[in-house]
Image 1 (cartoon, one colour):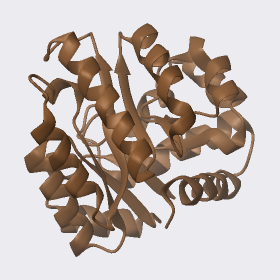
Image 2 (tube, helix red, strand yellow; image 1 turned 180 degrees about the vertical axis):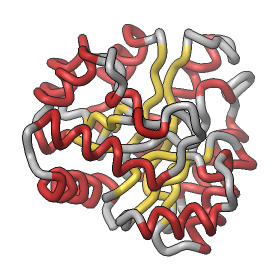
Image 3 (cartoon, one colour; image 1 turned 30 degrees about the vertical axis):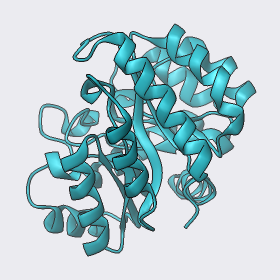
Length: 250
């Protein structure tokens, strides 16, 4: 199994122990995300130290206030590292509004352009901003190797995702009893567009709810997805691995 999106530098205990526990749970790959300059460095450092870890690097929408040329150049330098396998998480967050919306949109479009230029997939964050997020993606996605909708939470956009080939990555919230709309999407999504993640240390799956999340817990989410799709865990595991290999290119 593969955790296609987490934040090791925000998790406890130390990264080495988290990787060991993930390995014991059957994980073969872990994507850790750098959301600003300092966490990009930590993501690349974790990837350099641990064979299972690779990096997604970019600017989270919360970190885009006054985003400019120097910020984009920093991401581009990091993207040249062999352990950097995607740009992100980038996108729009109008729920928290930690950065001005104009800055968020400028940073989002700049990172999409960068991803197209360097040939990397993009991990997308969107919250309370779906209209603008999907409109911007429609303008840029044709030039991108792949679009990953991290922590997928837009069930009413399923048809557009399928039509445009966006991958949908499910986190622990798909396991919550009240997440019926999300669970229906998990049933209906074509297999070639399915990924799974933890978004650790957040969004712990139902068996671990109330405790900090970690990569090993992706197994709980994968088990729930397998049940929703009426397939074996082994089949779900193969599907996720095939999709991740295709998208991240290792």
